[in-house]
Image 1: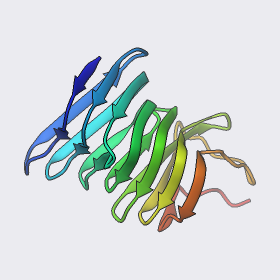
Image 2: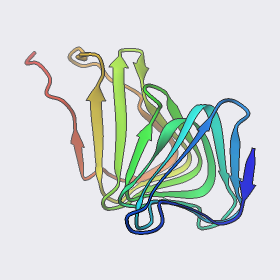
Image 3: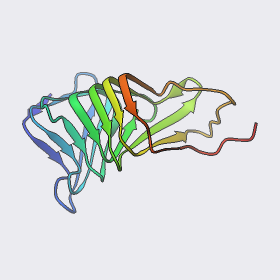
Image 4: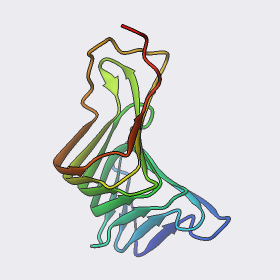
Length: 173
């Protein structure tokens, strides 16, 4: 367990930062604002049930060259995505206990591996889509059947829409 106040990952131009929270019982508690890739490059990954808690009304920001993702839980008032949120670590569920805002420049990445194995983003509060695309990738040459659907997102309430949805081409049916 790590606990600190204000945190920046990849904060300066030209800088690169990476944090991985790996394993059940592994946690990072940030008692102030957390920013990933404010001016540099940065990534924050939850693996195998790792947890992140941000105790700040401003919450957590993912900058234009930032990536946040994995499989685990982030407890935050608001997660603001202007970079990339990659739900799952391979295939898995990323849970946001709080609100999620995807702004201009932000992207949500979802991997689909089979009919029963795919990424999920679960938001307990408001899922607010104010721009940016949904990027869907099929793993291991998986091709969904015609009419097949996937429950890739759940939320408490939802507003807005993705600017676009990008996915590999599907065969003619």
